[in-house]
Structures are given as C-alpha cells and as structure tokens.
Image (cartoon, rainbow, N blue to C red; front, side):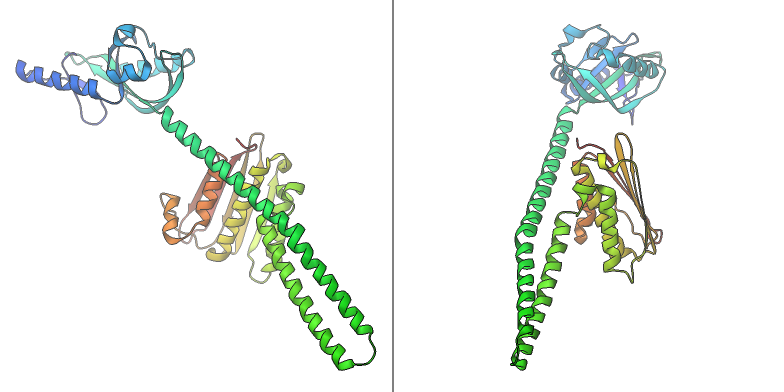
Length: 376
C-alpha cells in the first residue's frame, strides 16, 4: 500500500507527513493488518474505476481473488447498476464521500445481492485525489431474516384471523342459535300460560318468572352478538370496508350517543378491490384507534378517511384531543401495558405497510396507515 493514513470521521484518506522509516513501516504494517482483518469487503479503485487493492473479506463476499480482478473495471457491478456506480465513482474523485448507500452487487457466481456501500477519496503524496476506497457491507442475510420475520408475522395474523372467524361462526351457528331457540320456547310457554283459566296467582308467578328468563336470555344473546362482531366485523367480507366501517360507527353512536364526539368518515375509491387481509387490517386499526380516542383523548372531533388508489390504500385518523408524547420506538408503550398501538403496528407491518403516529400534548393525534391494495 502507498503511504496513507485514515482521517477522523469518514474514511477519507490524506497523505502522511514525513516520518522516520521505522515509524512509517510500522504504520503501514498496521494499516495492512486492519485492511486484511476487516470483516467488511474493502476495495480500492483507481481513477479509471479498476480494482487495485482487494482484502480477504472482499474475496469471501464476491468470490474472486485479487489476482482475478486486479485492474478489471468494476467486476462486481451488475450491468444495470453500472451507470449508478460510475456516477458515484466520478463524484468521489471530485472529493465527495458517501456512507451506507443502498446498492446491488454481483458475486462471481452471477448472484445479485444487496449491499450498503461507503466510498471516500484517496489522495497521493501531492495531496491530489488519485483513487478511492469502497467499503461493502453484505446485507442480504439481514434482509432475508427481516423478510422471513414479516412473512411469519403475516402468517400469524392470517392464522389469528382464521381462528377468530372460526370461533365467530361456531358462536353464531351453535350457541346463538340455541339461545334463540330457548327464547322462543320461553315465549311460547308464557303464551300458553296466559291462556289458562283459574289459578291466577300461580299463573301470574310463572308468567313473571318466564318474563325474567326471557329478559336474561335476551341479554346473553346481545352479549354473544357483541362478541361475534368483535371476532368477525359484520359485513366486511360481504359488503366491503366502507359499509363495515359505517356500521361500526353507527354501533358506536347507539352505544355512546350522549358523549360521542363528532365523527366524520369518508371513503374514496373502490374499497371492494381490497384483499380480505388488507380490509381487515384497516378495519381493526380504525377500531383500535377510535377506542383509544374515546378512552383517553377527550376529543370533540374525529375524522376518518380511506383513500383507495391503484396500488395502495391510505387510512388517516385525526382527532383534536389531548394528544401525547410519541416515543422514539412504539415498543416503549409495552412498559405501561399499552398494547393497542403495538398491535396496530404489528398488523400493518405484517402486510408490509407503514404506520405513522404524529402527536404532541395538547395538539391532538394524527395517524396514517399505508398498505398495498393486495396482500404481499
């Protein structure tokens, strides 16, 4: 290697001052050790973009030895990325530096893989830029693991949704139908009792008991229906997201007519084109967000807007309530046992969407969700 030393900060390299031969040799030996021992692929390119130095990590990452690539122009760059790399190289030769640039490289086998690329200029003894250093971090494995995690989350969400749907159907077709049958039988028993002559006191007592049983049965039926609607949003699969959300808002109005804030709802676009997982995710996020607002925000006005585009769907929920300090990581909500927002984030992430929460104390809250129209 020529006589260079690393400057602080970015790995820009500047000429070494005059030193004794022993100190100079020791410095160069140290640089060689660091260069070869680095776990990151390090390559130096001359002004023409040809390979000069090539460490052991570069050999492991790309598959070529230094002898195979020496003086070859960008052998690790795919044809479709050539113009991009040449632009970066020319900018570095003019003095620019880059860190953690996302790019695609190719191995000796022809396999393409993602990297994070950092580049900086190298100067000769006269202080002029003569070449550049490029550092490559192979991120194919982290990205693969992240993709596997997303797929696992997606499968778990689908499985959870299927279980909820199965339970809702079991309750509807089994327990609810039996309770409805009991209610009709009680009504028929009461009707027959009222027809009987004499024994008025006994009939009246029996009638009151049957009436009370009818009332309690109706309460159980109402509770079971509420559980079913929680497990399976009514009308979502049959009628689409717009009508399902309108039904949910109407239900809120019936349950909390006295203290319900003003809620404005709009839906633009073909909501029936949304896949079932996407529609269910948007419904659940809206449901959870509105519950949070009603429980914590003391808001007077809430707006919910869905906009379906060709390839994506956007959901925005805004309120004028008390707001809160959004942590740097939503995972911090778990410390206070606030799992609603965590569940929203997990649902959106499982479908490769994005969730944004903007809020400040006293300034309300603005939630934005963006999802692909079809599940990934």
